[in-house]
Length: 510
Image 1 (cartoon, rainbow, N blue to C red):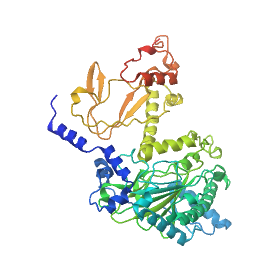
Image 2: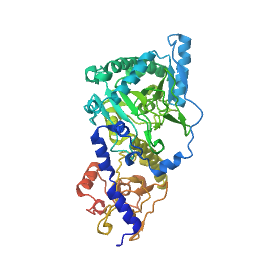
Image 3: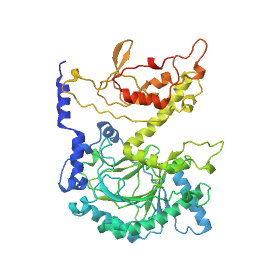
Image 4: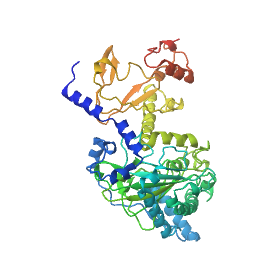
């Protein structure tokens, strides 16, 4: 097979640029984005450049001229004023998922010293920082560039110092970096107290007793995530932080006076402008889950900038993340007219899933899960069943992402990207870039499935053909073709035989 000039160029480009090698080389320096800036580079490395389709969307993107609410929580002890504050918090948390608080009880000097402590840490000598550089999530203190560096499509323009509170809920200051130890210890205590107050207000806003969310251990698991966003020579090509929602209960964010944070409100990006002395509060996914959508966890991001450094400290209330504690919609918020939207989750497994997928993977997975629910409704109805029939059979469970990377091949006529097979699951949702390759066997002929911009490929899996069979689809004129299968044994058989072993479905026939 002849290789065209375009194909040869693709081969050469891929051989010259191996993303994984570049990521590893960058990570092994332990110098982070700050190290790139210190080297006075004028163009950002390719690992930071966003995909062309993302950049194209930004051309017509203009921030909306609105702002999240700013709530004065001073005078909270007064009964009338407390009712007003609770109502403001309820409206902001339900509509925006974001608000700023002032008169929160943390002295301005402590806020300024915390920002300065983060700056001093990141700007100290590289050798002093290297001892903290790690991707081991069990460490109390660790420094890195993007916790999901190897899982994300593009790296973000920031370095991050992460400081965790111990499992017992007490600080271990001796493990903190000496250069910012005292101020981190002091600031964390203030934020813990503020967190207690915020969870009281949120409990009351939900019509619950003021200690309800605290009794669920929502105030546990405090973690300070200290971001350093250096000035960027090409900010239009990258991001400081990818669009995401926070996976936990609540975030308390301290930021310096350099803008960059944006929240997605009514499908428009809104700048969250820094307000002197204010802290940004945002609802996390877990709080949306347990409140059954009464409170909103909203998407947000941070822009890169030619001005820097932007410094922020996000304090996350994550709950007892190392425990197997189960969380689901709060009983008091459920009724016949307001049934549970979410199923229960086990916290340690939930946290592990987030850590393994990263910011981008988790956001995409949420969309796919929602799409899956819709597809199974349509398939149920197509079969003459009630729309929730396949979902009630748990066909929507067990979402797994298989992320394939097919480099250009110098001899493509001698190999395959993926062997001929059928998928063993219920349904597959496939996202592909604009490079062709996928083929489906239709009437004994291979047919190209050409990429269509913005489209997803859906294909039926073996289990949807076999599983059961469903009683409502069986009749005297349409007897069962397949015997029942035990799911765990079925999966084990697939894993042990692989794609090359073309067993087909005949082995499951009666």
